[in-house]
Length: 291
Image (tube, rainbow, N blue to C red; front, side):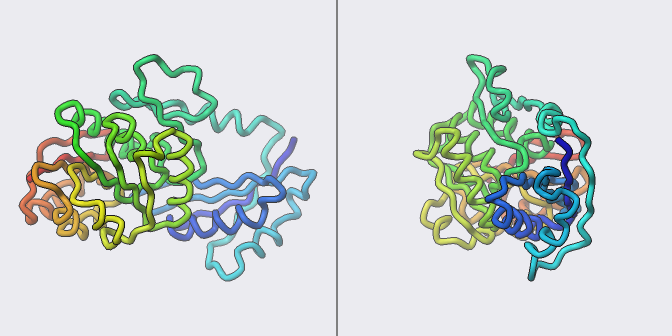
């Protein structure tokens, strides 16, 4: 069946608002809405909504625009999708990702899970973080290394997105994890993923701006803090992150380009924290720090 895709590119924050608006407007029509991370460093994300020809397809631009009333946005592009199984193609492109003992996959790949795998099921297009980005895979690999050495008593996943890291920590270490994000839509999706992955007894989700949240203060200090966001916010948060780190605790930071590595390390060294290890995946790095 031929489809029409309406899409635009914008920031993560605006993409979340647009995703929520389109999802609500076209929920009764079962029109798929998705978000894709195009360039994390540049904060470019793409939001798409799909209509079958039988529901108006190419004639729905006015409806798509109207659903964004009050939301500033760039021009909406329109693309005809050939009569192919586009979902099959998308899922084939998002192959399962292995990082340490973890495998991040969609429901369509449950059959490939091996006996000793720690499975994290995340569907593409739900929120930010499917495991395919180098920063997410790097964090999972670092978490695997650290928990092999010493199991922490609790953890904080700051800027959780889809909750992929929080779910991984909970499944591996079987400890309480607080997963927070500035984006309420991401937190809703994170909670759904937590339940789907069977760790709702361990992972709690909350909306929080940075470290300024009663939920963060109440559950801290933390023996493991993971933050996969961007270099500048990580640098700004260094004092607050250090303040919530328990004695002997570990910090895992990512969302950092190789060229930003030294600047981030300097911000945390100023807080009395020391670099222990760096993992590299392409142009991205994941850092491990302690006191």
